[in-house]
Length: 551
Image (cartoon, rainbow, N blue to C red):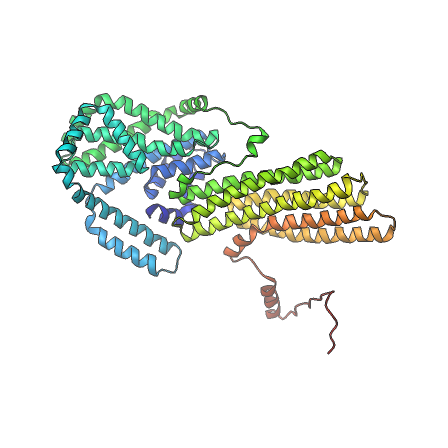
């Protein structure tokens, strides 16, 4: 609940903070630290960072600096939660429920969810103390922990398994702190468990990105190797470290929290200068991506393990839709190359690409439908719908290209080997180029949600409509003056102009929800009302197909 509240209310700020750390590794480190303290999950930060790295927004070196900061950030959260705040739990839960239930929405509701989550965390920590009583009295449990104390490597593996299974090193460390404070665990064994938890906490992001590209896989692998190296160096001296930290802090819970923090600080200090070498090592360990066209045009399985962090899951879906858009754009380019060169084989190959587009769409639709069943906030739910809507528009564009455009071009031009006039070719090209430009702009608007770009996209749509009308009029005048003009070629020309207009409309649709949310979308009815309020009479609209009035 804390993670959802933060990502829902401040998701754009979190993405902006990661984007602002592009050039400065120290700023990247601090961004990772701060974001992890907010999300209370280094795994969530790692998945976000990997997603940005996979899209080329972050370099691998910057991503590794962020993850080193994230590792330190989660230790600071553990430090805070070692203090006894259980008395605040009822107050936080009560205020959280009130804000979440009765607020109209927006960040107030997100703050309510955040407070409710924090209150339940403090309550859970208190309940663990009571639930651990049978463990304290169990002879079998005590014998197990004694055996683990004699085999520290097995204790590391045990701690790593717990952290991996819970997908949270923070939760595991808090559990270890609670068990130690109730005298269930010896301090040395607890320190060893913490080392294992640090490894286990780095495993879920590594596994979650196994199917991603090379750039997305490098940061989690590098972070996992950092932690393994740190554990290998620290484990032989764990007894000496325990005896050294004991006099500094009487409270065993504070000792464990301090060890957890010092270990990750040491990792950051030692490995920060070695980030470049780790980048080179991960490049060696991970094979290069297959950049062949076949690989780029294959829908990939989206990671459902990211559902616990909706912001990451939505980024996964966005990335897949962008790949889908690249395939559709290639279809559009190939279609007009086939039209220009009379290439029937290329036209049919392009038509078969629509099956790939449908695979992409089905994959994204299933993923987003499953994600929508998760407890999403209002903003994430809206973004989920926007992504699915844009994917649907891309799928419709693929159908227009494969069913209408290619069919008309093959049947009415390529099959008959008819030659178009210079004016007709120019009219089509004057519409084809703006559609290609709109394609790139619509993908940028889709990923950025930028209001000014959305406004530009919509303005270009209106200009395109005027161009299309002019092209249709030019063609109608041509066939009026030339009685021998090929009727099949004329029908193809009008169909191509119409299909380009439909494609452009689908592309421009991504701008409407952005402008509507910003209050900058003006409907014709509102525009007429505003003109009337200024003393201007709205122009009457005439329908050429309407029957004359008999009144």
